[in-house]
Image (cartoon, rainbow, N blue to C red; front, side, top):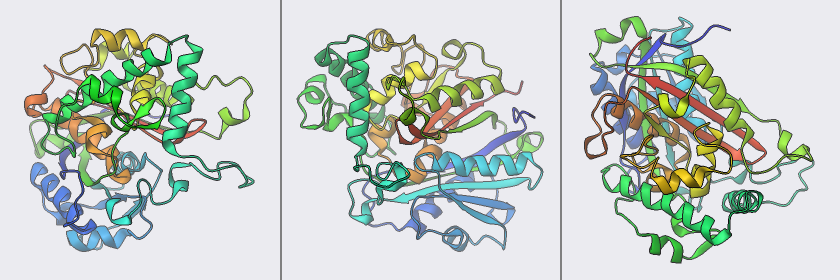
Length: 398
């Protein structure tokens, strides 16, 4: 299988502020994100040869993208892949360029969750939280309850006192809120304390309110081109090193011996991405990562699933500050889903926006020192039936 490494580059990105954007429509958000991306790349909408829009809103179509951007009769594809939807839009654009179908492509992720009146995804089936079996007779479950079960099983499996485990994941909330306080585009922009996290109202134990990501509106966009053309547009393009997508087939739900202390799709997707990018030691070679912290424990779980910590030992690195802004491997430097919320179609591209800016040295107060390689991770579905995207990018070829 031919590798995509260094064949495609990102030359422009845009991202709206995330939040309760009652005064903006889906089209407004698309225009705002795309306008920043066009200006960043130094191109016009007429230069785009193909486009992808990612959203879980069935009312959003190709025309929802092409009309406000005045795209000129080019192919536009709407994609949806649960919470990996934004990454899926980028994957479509990148592979089209790599295949030679076009030279310049646009990917946009957008969602207006607040307008639905729902407290999360407008349809639980979008994230696989109801009718998870073929018969349709299984009881429905919420995202907080599923991830809470994962956390409690993990604490039991590795002999971690539950109260101490809750303190470990509380440190992740504090970390991400600190990072978000430095980011003007985040929904939540204030620091919180350990006491606030520990004493917050419980949603699904061990998760309190501060352990759960918010419900937000937002959009993000990326413009990609052939790597050999990238420097015609800018001096600091960001090169795609690997794109891996792993969709489970409910193997975990069908296996008697599945441990329910990890997400197999994340393990597999990250290993494939590392292999394609030529990464042997991800903890040492990666300089920054944006991961799917829908709940604080999931970020802790990902430290192990993505190969950065030994199984059952992530707490040691949490205590050591390994993943803080000035740590060995900064994670969720922009505040993550925890501070941006999770407008589903936008999140994967929002993550890439942060890595893109960090690798260019343009992240302001959040800037990591001299990063060269970054990773984004997004996960849709539930434990045992998930789809996971891992994308690795770098600021140098080779």
